[in-house]
Image (cartoon, rainbow, N blue to C red; front, side, top):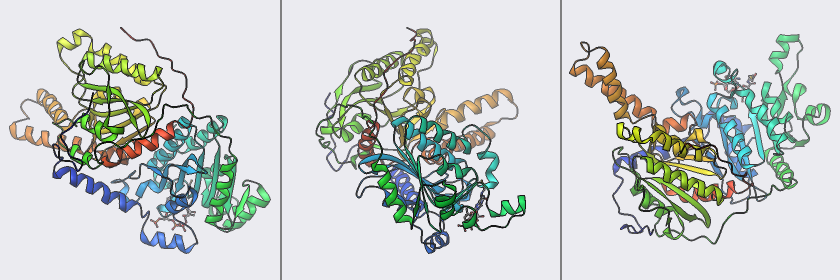
Amino acid sequence: MSLATNDSKSGSGKGSGKHFEQVLEKYYELYNKVLAGGSEKAVVLHRSRGKLTARERIETLLDKDSPFLELSALAANGQYDDQFPSAGVVTGVGKVQGRFVVVVANDATVKGGTYIRETIRKHIRAQEIAIDNRLPAIYLVDSGGIFLPEQANVFPDKEDFGRIFSNQARMSAMGIPQVAVVMGSCTAGGAYIPAMCDESIIVKNQGTIFIGGPPLVKAATGEEVTDEELGGGDVHARISGVVDHLAEDDVDALKICRNIVRTFHPEPSQPVNHITSREPHYTPEVLHTLAHTDPSQLIDHEKVIACIVDGSEFQSFKEDYAKTIITGFARIDGFQVGVLANKGVVFGETARKAAHFVQLCNYRKIPMVFLQNITGFIVGKKYEHEGIARDGAKWIHAVATSSVPIISIVTGGSYGAGNYAMAGRAFDPRFLFMWPNARIGVMGGEQAARVLTQLKKAKNKEEVDNQSEEKLYSQIKARYDDESSALYSTSRIWDDGIIDPAATRKILSIVLQIVSARQWPEHRSGVYRM
Ligand code: COA
């Protein structure tokens, strides 16, 4: 299929409208704000101690001019009175010595780099990415451990603070190299981070590691001791042996870390189908004209594909059958990919076509890109009698058992079971990004408001008159609209971050390189109900 569009290179098309521009502007405003880290006062104090900021540390660690794919930059946005920019931790994937690594850098300018629920989710998600893609992990530690007022939300459960350390042990057993650079406080459970790494570095007169700090020691035993005497660089490099290298300052520590990465054994990468890259026929900004905020309109995925794939060329699969899903092959920056993109509500044949295509990609070892804008599965007696649940199950099976990497981009609304089939978070796509206009929820705000108002009315017929019905409807809709927004999702790490639609191709290119860094497992599918 050729994806001819009538747009010019500068983009004309349907036009996204003013509202999308506002949404994009808002995203950039928030993003630029979090780049500064904590309060100005905290940053000044941090620098006065001779420290680099978390983002500067990452920049110094990574290869010059190499990209850094930052994850969930707007985590915790709109929560905790906005006192935790980026949830106090910067995570992402970048290159050291030409090799992709996962980086987790505490931001000590944000409440002493302490951990709230979202900080932990980001840390664990970064480890998950290291595990899935067999990438070394580097922890730049500068943290006061758990943010104590939140202890009930961050300590006891399976995916809480302790998970970080249990992951470290599992990662080590998988042969994933891990290095810690202790550049500030590293206290209580946090002390296990350097202690469980293969190799650790500490900055002299700056880094400290202890299970219990001086106030706790005094309270417990009466012993009086300074930070440095208890667990400073000299103690751990010379006396305890908890670290392996003593660095002069941040820059020296990061240089030592780079040298350590050079000694890692190379992971066998996945042989992939890759040729010379070609630019699409459309500038990335055309994507701004395709993104919109009107839930009643679908995102024009044919045009989106034309904007992101090499030469705007798309080899369609089953073009004339089950037209509410687009399936086919293309290249992104030279990488062969399979693309699945929604084009309307899911019927039985849509699900069967998608399941077939997912199987093809798995057997051909082709990574898949899912473009999600889905209202869900068709409802009604006719479709239930035809077995829509059985057909949907086939598709969900195929996605869940895929062994090739899946990358999901949510371009518009992603609702209900449609989200599962299109590789929502529960289906372990290797990466999942949201456009700023995207939405995620069990159903759209309007539908939810209608359903809930009907239920309420059926229960209390007398109490719900026209006026109160309208009020109820507006309240429910407003709540659903807020809770399904991309900002709400990204604040809670339901995704790996919001991306500017114009950056979609660039990000997919980096991600395709990352997911090819390890060999993919053999494919094995389950039992399909036919
Ligand atoms: N829980 C809650 N808040 C904490 C905290 C913790 N564990 N550690 C630090 N904070 C807060 C401080 O109250 C302060 O808040 P404010 O900005 O609203 O005033 C902010 O984080 C910065 O802390 P501050 O002590 O002023 O900064 P610092 O850079 O001089 O020291 C630490 C940072 C982390 C070394 C120091 O605060 C500390 O030792 N904290 C306690 C660590 C601890 O015992 N953790 C055990 C929990 S597992």
